[in-house]
Length: 98
Image (cartoon, rainbow, N blue to C red):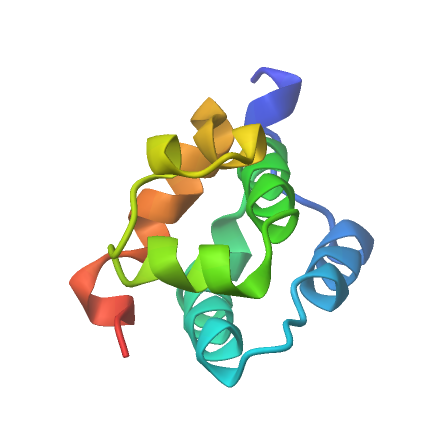
């Protein structure tokens, strides 16, 4: 199994969850629902994607999650990495929308 498909360890997951704390409640709700559904199977690759998304401002992240903007419309390159796009697609799934 490639290192990027390796499951995220408990310590790394804990650090990632801390990194994902946001200033906007709406973003926190999306992130919390995402972790509730996917945390047991998160890979190192997906963790990189989440980290890339967390580099965005709260408003840009919310615009992406609500599909008001697409990654290519943002100035931040981090929103367009393959890993970020994969995680964004999971976060946008209908079962995770507010």
